[in-house]
Amino acid sequence: MGKIQRYLLYLLPWWILVTLFSTALYLTRSEADRARQELTYAERIESAVNLLDDGIARLRRDTRLASQMAESYLAANNLASLAEFFRNFLIAHPGYLQARLLDDSCREILRLDRGPNGPRRTPEEALQDKSGRYYCSEVLKLDAENIYMSPMDLNVEDGKVVEPHEPTLRAAKRVLLPDGTPRGIIVLNLDSRPILDAFKRSGSTNLTLLNSEGGWLVSPDPADEFTFALGAPEHSFSRKHPDVWEAIRNAPDDGGLTSKHSGTWVYRQINAPDATDGNVFPTWYALARLDPAQTPQGGSYEKYMHYFVTAAVLLALTIISTLFARSNTRRVELADALAATNAELKASLDQLHESLDERVKSEKLASLGLLVAGVAHELNTPVGAAMLTCSRLQEQMATLQTAYEAGLKESDLTQHLAAGAEGVRLLHSNLQRTARLITQFKAVAAERSQAERSNFNLRDTVDEILELMHGEIKRRRIAIEVNIPPNIELDSYPGPLGQIVQNLVHNALRHGFELADSGHIVISANTNGDQIHLTVSDDGRGITTKDKARIWDPFFTTQRHRGGTGLGLHLCQQMATAVLGGTLRLLDTDTGHGAHFCLTLPVVAPDRLQPAAG
Image (cartoon, rainbow, N blue to C red; front, top):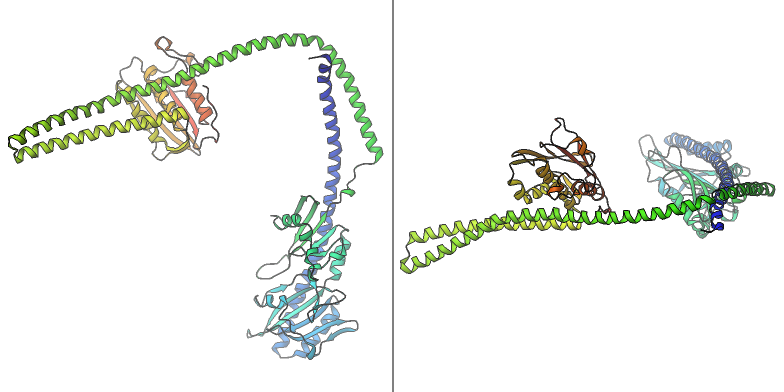
């Protein structure tokens, strides 16, 4: 590395860190300003929502009052008194445009409109049929005690939108006589202009109010307001900002923030507090888009000061770093020498790793060789019995042929058939055992060489391993006890698991009972949540305290004079950790004799198979 590169090595980190730190401070200040703006808009929206809640509550109370009065007057069949009540109601509540009574077919029976000179009753011949209006059909679906409050739209008379526009919020409730007879529908039309004006005054030009379909009730551009009621739905908010509208509609909470390409929006869903028990109230959405232009980014003076301080810090650090680099120039030569030495050590270590890999592969083959030898020994018995049975059957066939030529008696035929059936049975039994041993060996050998993952039963897998080791086990007077519940199912690698069990049992036979004529090995398992604890214990001579600290080391063995490689337990630990995703530990025994190994592994092995050593 040249001198310039060495100097840059000391300077560049400081330049990068100071630049990043300065930028982070600048962005933190901007983010704080943005958070204050979000809080301001959220407070404005909350204030506007309170105004809407007050309007809904007032309309709800007045509708119940009008309904009760109507039921009282209509029970006395006094329509004139009801008309007088409507007149007084509109005088006392100038915010209402209309008070009406409709029959169950949605035709007006009584109607009073607010006029410039006070409330005016509509002549009977001018009463209208409102069966085509949605609020009439909707209220008829409700029970008599429930209120239907319509979405906010423009007032319509004789099928036309009233000019100038009259934003209207309607409340309707069915009227019943004391005997439960339907008598009509009370409808109150609330002039929504004061509510909308107050909504605008409580917020800012960015504050927006939408109906449940994404149509503008209050918009920064007045030309977009109520376009959904004027036959121009393409001007609605849901069409202009579909991604924002979709995020707001599907949000799990009633309020929050959403950021899209059009900007960051603060929103709040508005529902009536008691929109339950069958009452129907409209849903609105109040929202505002944060104005990036209103986020303080600092004036020119602050920016220049920020740049000046950053440059001064960079200059000071550059001088210090240069001096430090110069003082460490001599250390570079020593570092180069150390690097060369490290390279030599690394080469030696790589060579050692290659040797270790080769020994591990040899250990795997040796483990599989023990299994092959055991299976071959086990196959000798059923194959020999099968061959002996075949020879016996051939002799019986020859005897039967001789008896047939000399004159076969029925008793002779029965005797030959019975002997032949017994021979066929013995032949079939021994061939079945031979086929089962070959099948088990092929499965175990394939799983060990390829580490295939599958769902398997722990008890069945351990039984198969012990059966394949039967030839090695039966030569010793060592009892093996298996205490594994039959219902433990795993999603793991049965091949490596079986090799670990085989190695532990083999070690117990070879080391724990080296000179003993009898002994006891216990293989047990239990579950703990999603973990399996598999233990292999013996009552042999045990492991010395000195050897316990080294049994996991590669190449450590107490049987090197007998061909031991010292890789068995090392390989088992590698497979337990890297393949099965568990741990293999040597536990202390209470008596101080014997060895107690515990394999802890998950019921479901890790998704990815990690390579074990070798």
